[in-house]
Amino acid sequence: MTKIKAIRIDTNGGPEVMALREVELGAPKPGEITVRAKAIGVNFIDTYHRSGLYPMALPSGIGMEASGIVEAVGEGVMQFKVGDSAAYASGPAGAYAEANNVAAASAVKVPDGVSHEQAAAMMLKGLTAQFLLRQTFRVEKGQTILWHAAAGGVGLIACQWAKHLGATVIGTTSSEEKAALARAHGCDHVIDYTKEDVAKRVLEITGGRKLPVVYDGVGKSTFIGSLDCLAPLGLLVSFGNASGPVTDVNLGILAQKGSLYVTRPTMYHYAAKSPTALQEMADDLFAVVKSGAVKIEVKQRYSLAEAARAHIDLEARKTVGASVLVP
Ligand SMILES: NC(=O)c1ccc[n+]([C@@H]2O[C@H](COP(=O)([O-])OP(=O)(O)OC[C@H]3O[C@@H](n4cnc5c(N)ncnc54)[C@H](OP(=O)(O)O)[C@@H]3O)[C@@H](O)[C@H]2O)c1
Image 1 (cartoon, rainbow, N blue to C red):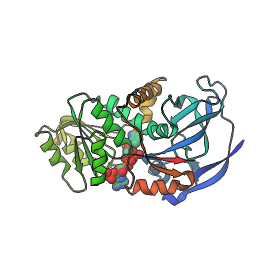
Image 2 (image 1 turned 30 degrees about the vertical axis):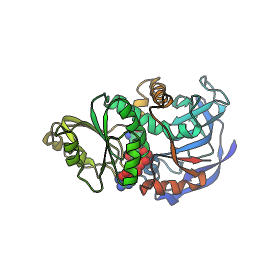
Image 3 (image 1 turned 90 degrees about the vertical axis):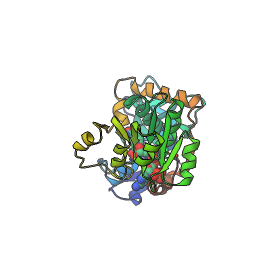
Image 4 (image 1 turned 180 degrees about the horizontal axis):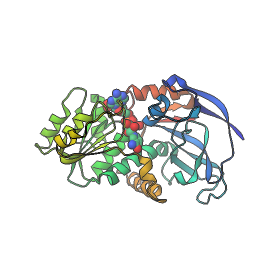
């Protein structure tokens, strides 16, 4: 048993339910490693776990992503040894901690040239960009795509990557400052979706053709508008709920708006497609990062004790790009 500081939640609620406590961390179980965190990723999913939108058994830790040093190795673990650099983006929630035990199968080695802060900023967000752009819908040169919340954590990575793939990238943001950042990270066109009619602008930008795919992590407030941006037989990839979940959809609307497709994917199903899927997705991500095509920058840093502040800022749309907690 080691004493560590960790954020715990006993009840669902606002950021104030997160408390920094001293807890005991046991030895890693068979198949697990103990990762001493150097940097911890903050993700919108953490706010859903905290609020109860995505229910989990309580009391619980919180946080899905961190990068650090392997401090102990459980029985049967062959791929890691003590002292290795490891990063993970998986449950059970508990990454907001000085150290955490995770399944070795859900961790990857941090390659040379990638810092712990970068790894913590890109595992969950970058693997999400990977499956969305390379698997859910394979973006190809010459296509035009729309990415909502383009200046967000997933957004900045995905827009750079989509541009690198040769797509024309349309992004949405809520301010001119965020629009400038989105432009600097791959967006050819940026629409302020708090002021402009997105479907109308998409029609203009595409000369009336509309889009084969829309990536929408905003959810409730953008869902119908996203459908209106799609060409017949187009695909809406609804991958998150930053503005609230999409519920009560009459499927007939998909016929009405052009025999459209909708998918609601999660990274975890893609990473579990095969025993090697996670590593293959990470290799693809690390390759575009190491080539310089996708730059990973930490835009906000907080201490572990400031986790509530990080959630307040993320939910208030005050952040851009990736946020990390530094224990
Ligand atoms: N399916 C998966 O496997 C998967 C994996 C990772 C992330 N995600 C999803 O991807 C999305 C982005 O995640 P992230 O961690 O990178 O967050 P993020 O994009 O950094 O933050 C969310 C952004 O959404 C926009 N937004 C629009 N309406 C909002 C509202 N009412 N409240 C708060 N934000 C609003 C804001 O940008 P503007 O100010 O520019 O509007 C905000 O910055 C989230 O929905 C997340 O759940 C899904």
